[in-house]
Length: 241
Ligand code: ZN
Image (tube, rainbow, N blue to C red):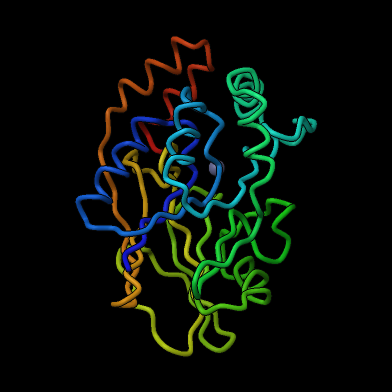
């Protein structure tokens, strides 16, 4: 089984198309969506339709939550807030219900999926370092868990209580260790690399690999501007921040 695992799409259709096309070429047999399908970029409806069509296991992200719940957007920065308000006007009631019903944590075969953290998934905390990861590991009942949210691909490895961080190029899973793996962001990477990120988990080879893909960024940026979304949201795509 080869899983394509991707999230933080954030309504970037061009990036999502590139990821799905590449994962097909690389003979992925299953798809997993780590949440935050909407927010920031200009194609929330098309991205939602594409994920629903895949029918793949999907967990809820904070943007999915706020767009569908009608909750106050006070905790968000001004750019995110503007995009979320716009997104609410672009999707219909059924879309919102679908997003609202997504689960925060899911187990798929022998691994776990969560958008943010396992210790308090509904609070949308960030796992940036070993300390954050240790808190999440305390609630991780499977050897392997995938996450997103920071938009920075990274693997945290727990070797009997000792937590290490490694860059996620290619990680071979070893028996007796636990892994909390952030697959990066499809539609708004923040690690200084503008290319779309996703991971492939080859369950037969116990291997997780990160892939980066160029996509039609100019087209995605033009749509952001044409829809009257903040210019900064278009600019940040080019620098991967
Ligand atoms: Zn996100």
